[in-house]
Every structure is written in structure tokens, then in C-alpha cells.
Length: 220
Figure 1 (spheres, rainbow, N blue to C red):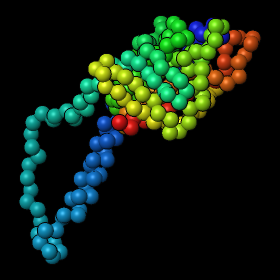
Figure 2 (cartoon, rainbow, N blue to C red):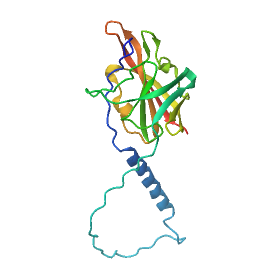
Figure 3 (spheres, rainbow, N blue to C red):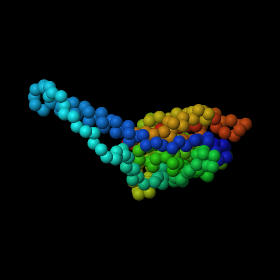
Figure 4 (cartoon, rainbow, N blue to C red):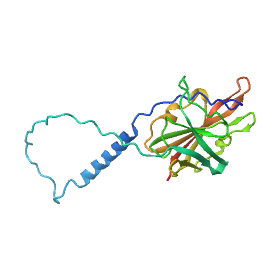
């Protein structure tokens, strides 16, 4: 974003396919297979040949669709607290601009949750963005780069519940190489992405050259 606090890099949003449940289903199927092998013999002796199997017709009927994952009922986020860097802010709701870029908060004093991402605590990656600074001083995410693995992030939701996340990584990427798939792509658990600008500041354009991306996972 610029020093005026009006821009974060044009982050392209990627619609999230329902792949997390498929991955979880694969794990469950693998587990069921192992269990089946473990209890295959209930007689206490090796299986004996049973001759040729009897032929049975293929059943006829409409093939049922594969079951779809049931959406988790998680309330929308309303505030964000990161004690270790002194952040306590309400959360505005952000969508996409007409060009398909991610909106940014209209003020540098609050962060915003991208409504096209998961709700914090639901399966998927919830995306929250904020400004680093402005002409009047530090923005809400000015110290985001100072987080480290193990730091805690707390998100209050509209129903009063609290989603607690633990930071797993803090990385900086040139804006030209923004990791779209890693930020917006499907994940099998509840995760969080916190994004702001960072790196070197280009005085000619008035923009920071990088994005700081903090990744975290739900711990309770």
C-alpha cells in the first residue's frame, strides 16, 4: 500500500474448490482399509479357498451423487487481537473491486476480513488484511512482520465465541510473485492468513515492494 494508506498490492482472489473434505475422506478411507486388514481373520486360522464366486447381476438404478461436505456453522468475525504486537481492532468486511482485486480497508486503523474466504475457525483459510502505515503514522499491521511461530492470534466472532490461532510462519514476498495459491487455495483444516505491505519502499511510485504474509492454524 502507499504511504497514504490506501493501497495493498492487487491480490487476486481465487475461488476455493471443495477439496479439503475430499482429502479428509481419503484419509478416512485409508484408515478403514487398515482396520479391515487387521480384523480380516476372525477364525484363528488362515483363510481357505472358497471356489469360484457366484455371478450376480450389476444392480440397476440411478447413481447417487457423492456426498457433499456439510458447511460448518461459524459466526462471522468482528474483532482481532494480537497481544504480542499490541493489535486490537474491529474487523470490516471486504470484497473484490471491479477489476477483481481484493479490497482494502478505507482507514489504516482497522483490519478487514475478506468475505470470499473462510470464516475464522471454519475449514479453509480465512484472509485478513490491514495497512502498514500512512502519512499520519503506523497502521494497524505496522508490526505484523515482528510475529514469529508460536505467537497467538485471537478472533472474536459475532456469537461471542473466540477462535484462537497459532502462527506457523511469517514470510515476505515480492508483490510480483505473490503466492496466490498458498494464500487462497484449499486447505484441510482451519487456517488464517494475515497480510500487509512490507519490504523496501519505492519513493518513485509510493508503494512498498513486498507483502508480509503471516500464516496460522486454529488451536482451539
